[in-house]
Length: 226
Image 1: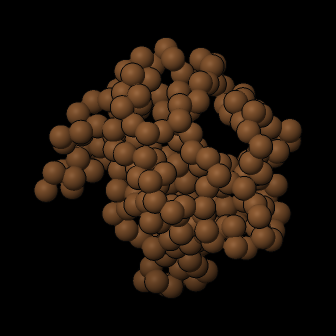
Image 2: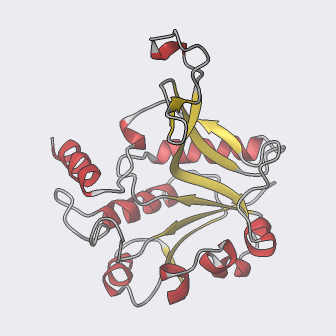
């Protein structure tokens, strides 16, 4: 049996949306919704060997609020939560875990359902040929090359309908599954060989709305409050 560690991460200082995790989001915050999601997974039948939430103690609001939830808090150093760019530095604490794989959930997807997370992890466990997993959805539109000023997925210049363009996969960064040894020893996320990563296809849905900008924050909050 392949063992999977479920991991959440968060930090107070965000670069694109100020205080994104702790500022009001309707009657709650993104961080509280995140903690509730991890707690809800723990309280139901799930495929994970352990569930952790990695925080740095200098993020005092997050660290204090996390104590209100039935989720194991894993200390991470300041460098990993601020300036680190390499996997072995960002996830330095994973060297202390015995699981083979880690599934990371993105805190910026407020509508992501626990059912979706558990289904993806079960799929990965059942398909033992997969080395990692990355979420994508299918797009059929024109994608323009800024150097040539021409859509790189348009085969015929006479085609005026976007459905005639070649379909393309777009990353959905709601969660990933990585082999821990690749992160810690190889210092890489994927080899980009067959099934590494395996492209896990998701239909477009409110679940996969990602908050990276103030506009996206406002849109998602409006949907949440409607």
